[in-house]
Amino acid sequence: MNLTPTEMDRLTIFTAAEMARRNRKLGIRLSHPEAVALITDEVMLAARRDMPYAEIRDMASRLLTTDDVEPGVAEMVPMIYIECAFAEGTKLLVLFEPISIGHLPLLEPTFPGQVFTPEGEIEFFEDGESVTLDVVNSADRDVQVRSHTHFFESNRSLDFDRALSWGMKLDRPAGMGIRFEPGVAKSVRLVPIAGKRVVIGQAGLVNGPLEADGAKARGLERARQRGYKGA
Image (cartoon, rainbow, N blue to C red; front, side):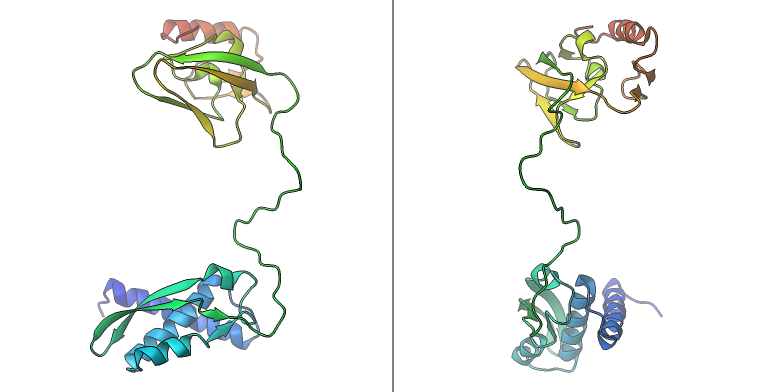
């Protein structure tokens, strides 16, 4: 039996919908994929049965309520687009807010990946040692430096006091960084790399503990030999 990608997708929807029906029968509130699969499967089946378009939309709006799904699921499904195989051909059916309000009190919704933070401002690296450096990009194109980079080993075209940046990183939250445009001077604040203070890889100027005897001198010499500005 050879199945097209569309037919494989249809079987996946049906399987997820069957799981949703079982969970619903057992009183288990449905997750987002389960709720979407159940509604989609019922709509596609109704189209195959050649129910009128308007009747399908009415039927679909009464399939699930907030009583049937986990908190927050209804808010995650503002609309569903379904390609349905009617007798006269494929039509796109759009359901707006397909999960209606039920009878039970609405629980506080939680969403996948939701982050709960305390009140007030959160300050990073507010205490402890820091250094501020003026940096000029001597290259002919932008240079981006990320928050995790040992700033001493950043792009060799960046001109700044490399010695002062030993063991330091940008004062930026994880995943963020700073872009340096050609010829434009920027003042940046650096803070110490925390933890065991061992730097491996990057530009290969350290490859070991930052506090080891002679590590800084050896790193500066490697930087000078390789043409790093400011070394």
